[in-house]
Amino acid sequence: MMLPTHALSGMALALPLLAVAPEFAPVAFAAGLLGGILPDLDMYAGHRKTLHFPVYYSVLAVGGVIAALLIPTMATVAVAVFLLAAALHCVTDVFGSGLELRPWEGTSDRAVYDHYRGTWIAPRRVVGYDGSPGDLMASIVLAIPLLFVIEGVLQWVVLTALVVATTYTVLRRVLADLATVAVGFVPTPVRAYLPARYLEDVDVTDSGGSGVDSVSEY
Image 1 (cartoon, rainbow, N blue to C red):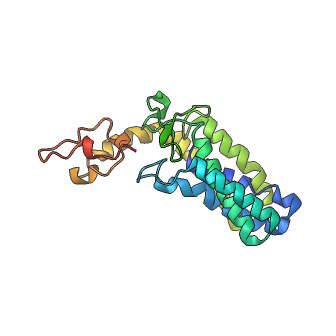
Image 2: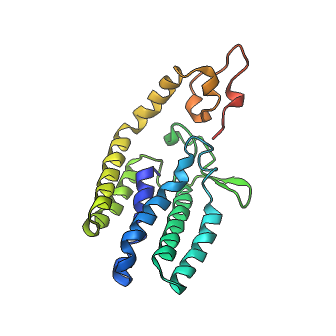
Image 3: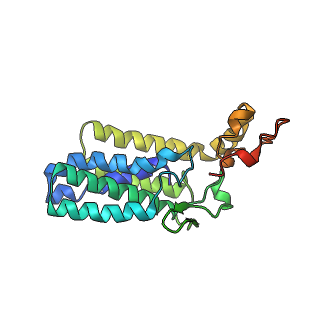
């Protein structure tokens, strides 16, 4: 799934608080937003591995929820929602596509790395791929209730997420082609640090021996 969908799903986790503990809702919406974004900060540094922990986030989230139920404070509720959002991000990535530049081709067998078992979890492709029409629909469905109950800055965050999601979906396939063209202008020493998916259509070898073997496979 694309980042806007993850961000909105993290925020949506806080919706039930409006009915049971509305005083905690504002901080929970913010915590859900941050937790939904956190895992994808590894986009260019071992994507879906460095900051993706489907098992460990889930275990910590259970502990966080228990702590928030026993000791309901702004801090415990924020931590619980943050961990839930991070766990949800990692788990839902499994139901998307694998790690490839053109995920609609379905060539990758790596969705998310399971640090607990030390192996990659295969993609289920229920959602299709990040930026697919189904992914955009998920963003829209998540955003609708949020727009009705959230005000101020966070409401603008939701609207911005929708704009980004729509734009990304429209340009998704074009961006994949542009990425391979843009990489051709990147200096060879720098290419060695780019994820391999960006180099699928590029000859990265040079006379100095730097090439695809030294490129991050993530």
